[in-house]
Amino acid sequence: MNKVIPDTVPKLFFNRVEEYDDRVALRKKEFGIWNKISWRQYGEMVRHVGMGLVALGLAPRDRVAIIGDSRPEWLYADLGSLSVNGISVGVYTTCSAEEVRYHLSHSEARIFFVEDEEQLDKALEVRNELPTLEKMIVMDMKGLKHFNDPMVMSFGELVQEGKEFDEKNKGLFEQRLEKTRPDDIATFVYTSGTTGLPKAALLSHYNVLCNSNSFAQHVQAFDTDVILSYLPLCHIGERTMSVYHAINMGFTVFFAESADTVPENLREVSPTFFFAVPRIWEKFFSAINIGVQDATWFKRQSYKLAMYIGKKAADRKLIHKPLPPWLWLSNLLVSITVFHKIKRLLGIDRARFALSGAAPISPDVLEYFHALGVNIRESYGLTESSALIAMHTDHNIRLGTCGEPLPGVKVRIAEDGEIVVKGDNVFQGYFKDEENTKRTLIDGWLHTGDLGEMSDDGFLRITGRKKDVIITSGGKNISPQYIENLLKFSPYIVDAVVIGDGRKYLTAIIIVDEDNVIKYAQDNRVPFTTYASLTRTKEVIKLIQDEVEKVNTELSRVEQIKKFVITDKILDQEDDELTPTMKVKRKKVSEAYKDIIESMY
Image (cartoon, helix red, strand yellow):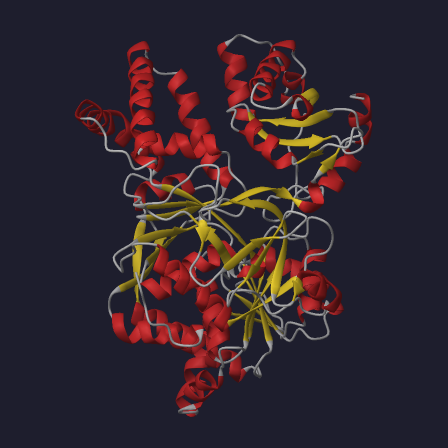
């Protein structure tokens, strides 16, 4: 799909508002009903929010921070800020008060949109340490009806103030909109912070629009397509899909009610475009396979036969070989009788386009979904590249790679194996961090920190993170992510951290899937009292040992896991073991489990 794109995000947005008018842009569920928000209503809200911010004194290039789950108000705040030449700054809802203080202090935010009382409390706790913060705007006032503070106002009050200010200042909104230039910064996007404090990547309007245009050239999309927004909007992947791509291609965006209702909402909406991180695809795979174990003998055999046929068909389709008549007919039958029911249960039965991104995914998981008939592609990108760098196309899906570079994006492999990228999507640098900017941007090339390989015909394969490479005492270089992804393919393993830097052999800290392992214990009458006691039973240790040995058969001797420990707790962001995007902080984990790790050597 090709679109001619205006030169800034808000100009593109208001073009779409004029073009689509009363067509549905957004849908939000309230009291059991998916309420419609038209493009015209969407535009009015963005305008009123923008003018409300101007009424509060927002100057061009001032920062507006937003903390909240995926909801229409997040988009109104984001686009409202951009429309009056402000800069939006996303903050994860999982951030502590201290982390909120860091983001607002570092970005010098003047206005802070908060979702509810819980998020407001964080801001109130640290506001005395935030000299630039002038106003906090609450999206959901539940529990705050009688709360009174001169620094706090409701979202509704801001909208009303913006509407009145707009009526008194005719033409001011258009002036601010027109003054926004393509090379102006649109947003600060904070990186994961796996090795230290998060860095604020500066993305211009031109950066994000070029990336969206490249994506539009790469996919077959229609303005009748539907997506479900459920991941954090401060993550560049979700923002790109729910804001930039949705505006560019005219998608209708449904908003999940909460993190807990995502499975139910997926089934209700059944999106035609679906983006998910590997953890979601792994959970789908795990849920299906555990569910099959509970089915009748006949259903288990039907599933096994269907998967055999589906895999045969997918293998041929992926290498562009026609299906023999018997396979074509067999695949059609199992698609109708078995696979459609599974996809309907997950809510992806209408998904013409499915995408995995934000982290590496096991090729086995991708192969499984292709066998089900899900057109899933792998993608690769960074915050610093405005999201996408490479992606599979409809007719070029090669498992084990993340596809070809997008149009206009140059990729090469440096001498040390690092992936370096050049293009109009590459960011402008890090805010207040000249040292890291110079280290990351060299002669216009973005040094990604990822290691990879490029095939002769242009397919990119990620082999690991440069800073995570394990160098054993024998001098062998090993990428832990590849091994960890193989381990996580097991329905009984939800996370794994491979250890071995400077050691004679590799070990692993393994976090089991609590629900699936408890079910295994119940089915096999394994006695236990608590989850912690369950992880120490000989039956569960044997179960995980078998899973590790399966993975070891796919690895060279030096890559094999020689010993492992099952932890009795999940990795937690509150313990500083995970980033807000659920990436492992390896150094922190190594420190937290130092004694356990030493016991394996």
